[in-house]
Amino acid sequence: MMIDCQVRKRLFETVARRVIANADELTDLDRAIGDGDHGTNMRRGFEAVLASVDELSAKSLGESLKGVGTTLVMKIGGASGPLYGTLFMSLGKSLSDEVTYEQTANAFAIAIEAVKARGKSDVGQKTMLDVLFPVARVLREGGTDITTRLKATARDAAEKTIPMRAIRGRASFLGERSIGHMDPGARSSALIVDAVAEFMEGLA
Amino acid sequence: MSENVGIVIVSHSADVARGTALMVEQMVGREVPLGWCGGDPGGGLGTNVEAIMKAIEQAWSEKGVAILVDLGGAETNSEMAIEMLPEERRGRVVVCNAPVVEGAVMAATEAASGATLEAVRRTAEELTPA
Picture 1 (spheres, helix red, strand yellow):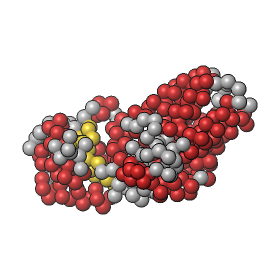
Picture 2 (cartoon, chains in turn brown, red):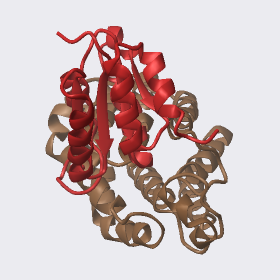
Picture 3 (cartoon, rainbow over the protein chains, first blue to last red):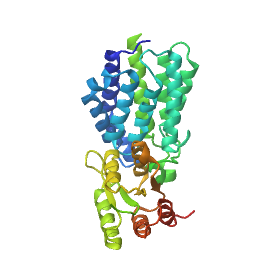
Picture 4 (spheres, rainbow over the protein chains, first blue to last red):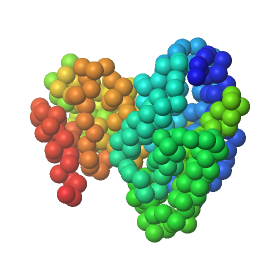
């Protein structure tokens, strides 16, 4: 599949708009178990992506993704900046304009390992990894109805963070009291996966 | 040009970072290059990679720079900032696992004696229970 400049631009806009549209929900989730700034931070980061989307998407796919990552690192603030920045920068390192399904799945698998290293966290600790790893598994399996399954997996995986106890991040200070709330980072990851999957359906 | 290790203070709050920097200056004077930052890119509570990179630049010493951080995001953003430095500087900046105020004062006191980056880090980290 060829991801040209126009497609990249629409993809970045779709993802950014989805995050921005749901920023208040992310902040509400973060207020329950964190410091209540996840939505505000993510909005600031993705508004910066929107503001420079022409410039960002004019480069190759790899360079575009790295540019989005750097923008997020610089503008989000808080731990989410480096975490989402690392995700996009790592994808950028692995992908060129002409991408196959397999390359995308591999690039994603590498990128989430980079996020895991950056956050010194692991699956099961009530973080974005609890969405990204199940999504990577579905990507690796491939098969029919992939976008439908990606969306369902992301949504369910975010829900599954509700009974988890936080080990990393600000929510870990709450210990047992972090149980019963969805992790805001898991939710924002699910939103992004959903937006990308929907975008892919529009391309098919 | 200072011959001492530089100290950078990264807090979620600009007030905490500035206050800590003042304490360090009072204890060790200006013999130690000092940089500090606090607040997110929008001016609220939080941390900011760009500001951390500037603080490292401000505190730069050929002997290296030790960073003291408060909460999680400050550590993650500091590590990110280090990775985004020019390659020849990257290996000479460390994040200390220590409480920000006490760590900064201890680290700066050690740095003022001309100690190496590793010694400065070790001194700051003595404050952290193993």
